[in-house]
Image (cartoon, rainbow, N blue to C red):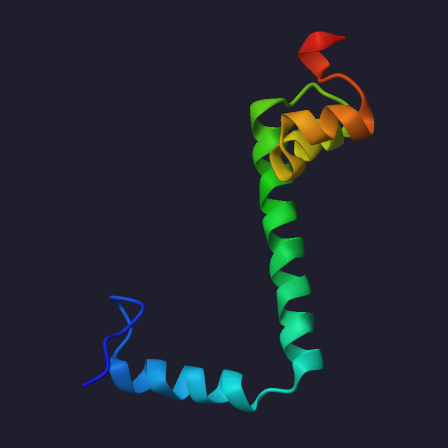
Length: 85
């Protein structure tokens, strides 16, 4: 009996998912990863728009850099964080 990775998915369905992923060509797997990264970025920006509705898109992009790169690397790449300016 296989242990599932997701509590809300039956072992049979999960096995089918794993088999499909194994059969999928590498280019398609990379495309899926790219789509997931875009979705995460879009969700993060939506959260930033909700929390900082009066900021400009450039200010939100800087905040996004903090989230994605971490404050230290984002500061090295894009300059000081908004609160530090």
